[in-house]
Image (cartoon, rainbow, N blue to C red; front, top):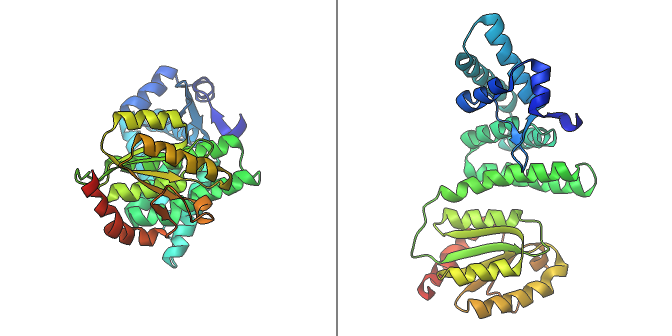
Length: 307
């Protein structure tokens, strides 16, 4: 099958394991975690199939229980992961190797391996380093690969979705401080690149700001609806990479000001790097991430008195 992804029916036929058994192994013991289509159908990777085959062999040939077999499998995979990721050399060497391994795993639709590598990276290097030194470069590489035809649309969507989900998980980790203004963050209609917006939104969340994150390609109607419902939005953040969208964004900012006149506007992205004279935005974020904290401490904190 293309990309080595299999349906549950195909896995049942290949391994001679009843579908009810497969579902029980997944739900009760987390033996494997197949991907799912939008309609909920399971899709098993090549690694999933090999793990299931190994589990079946342990049960039938060694006479051990499925729970014990799953524990052995996880220990084995963790040991293999450490042996292949921990390398000598500089931290840059380690980040580069991890980046390549995560990219390869995602490119081959090996979601479990990619997530295991990411988990291992977080435990080894921490949140900041993994995001800025590994995951963001992977996302950039994904986009570049798609643009030159080295990744299909399906691969690009899958890889971006998998990493973005890891970003989203951190939105609920950090505490929210009620005295800070709430932020609405989005990419306008027609803008599909949201990496910079995700990073900036996570930075704000880390500093205790409640962020309503809408993501890429957000229609104006949806934004206006939220502004009508949410009364504490003190800042609206837009990210744009396509220069052709600048005129639309400038008009959009003026329109949104009419709906939420008390809000400050923050814009960023490659398009605004080339257009530093926004009429409607108070802040144009051209600074590198290492300077965001200084900006936040000097400028953003001052917005609280306006809420």
